[in-house]
Length: 411
Image 1 (cartoon, rainbow, N blue to C red):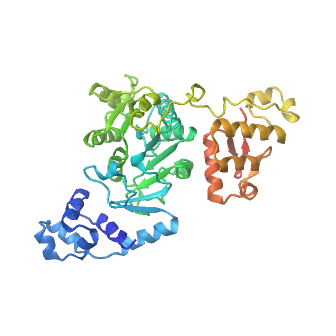
Image 2: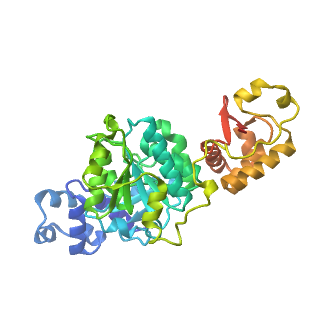
Image 3: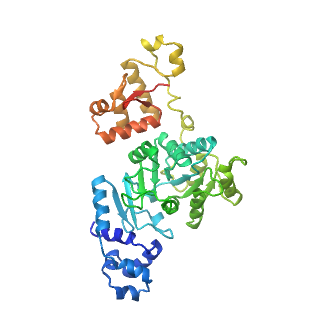
C-alpha cells in the first residue's frame, strides 16, 4: 500500500502523459524512485521543463486522500505493476497507471471479454439488437464491457444482466459519481454481478475530455469491439479506431442505410470490419480460444426473454380467478403461498437466480412488501438486498411500486 501512493502521485502529474510515465518508469524503475529523484536527475533523463516542474511537486495529499476515500467507500485500487492488472491493458500504447474499481473484478486475461458500444441516440432496432447480442454472448459465458452510457451501452449491459452474465462498466469519472444519474439501478446491478472501473480518483466529475480516454480502456480490456449503431461523428468510432491500433478485432452490425445513427457503423463495414448479426457470431469467433469459458447453450435459452415469458404461470386462485378480463389485461396475478413458492422455484431454475435473489422472492411471497420489511425478512444487509432487487427488476421478476414497495410479477 505504501508504494500505491506513489503510483497515484505519478498518475496525477499534469504535463506527464501516460506514455511519458511509462518511459520514466523504464528509467527510474519504480514511481517511488521517480518521486525521490532530484531535479538534476530529471534533467539527465531528458525530461522537458514542464515534466520537471510537475515532478518537482512532491505533495502526496491528493494521493493519500484517494486512498482514504477508496478505503471508506470500499473501492479497490490496482497499479500498473499489480498482479491483478490485466495484461491485455498493460500492453496498449498508453495504459492507465492506476485503476479504481468496485464490485468483483475478474481476472480479465482468463475471460472471453468483448466490448459492445454504440450511440446514445440510437434507434429501437439498435436497442433490441444490442440487448440481444449482450444476452447471447453473456449466456454463453462471455463477459461484456461497456461504457454504461445511455442508449446502446445500457442496452448491451441490460441484455447481459438478463442472461445472468457479467458486465464490466468503464466510466469517465470517479466511482462515487453515477453518470448519467438515471442509470443508478444499472450501476448497482453491474457492481453486484461484475465490476465498474475507472482510472479517475473518487470525486472526479464526468468531464467531456475523460470519455475519449475512457474508450481506450474499453477496447484495451477486450478481445474485440462490437459497434451496434454509430453516426458519422461518434465516440464509438473512436473506440473502434483505438481497438484497431491495439490489435483488437472490430465488428459492426449492419444498420438502416437511411438512419443517421447507422452511418458510421455502416461505414466500418465498408472499411472491412467484421459483420455481426448475433451474439452467437461472437461465440463462434472466440470459442476456440476459450473452450473452457464459452459454450453454446441449449436451444431453449437461445433468445432473450421478455421478463419471464417462458415460465409457465402458476394457476391463480381466489381474487385473481375472479378478476377475469382485468387480470388478463394487466397480466399480473395474485396467488396463494404454495403456488407462488412453486413459481419461485421455477424462476430460480429457469432464470438462474442467485441465492440472494431467491431469498428476496421468498421474502415478498404473495404481498407487496416495503424495502425495510424485505431486508428484515430476507436476512440480507441493505446493499445486498438492493442489488438483488435491482437484478430481479431487470429480469422482469419483480416491480417497484410507490413508497419503495415491491411485488412479484407473473407473466
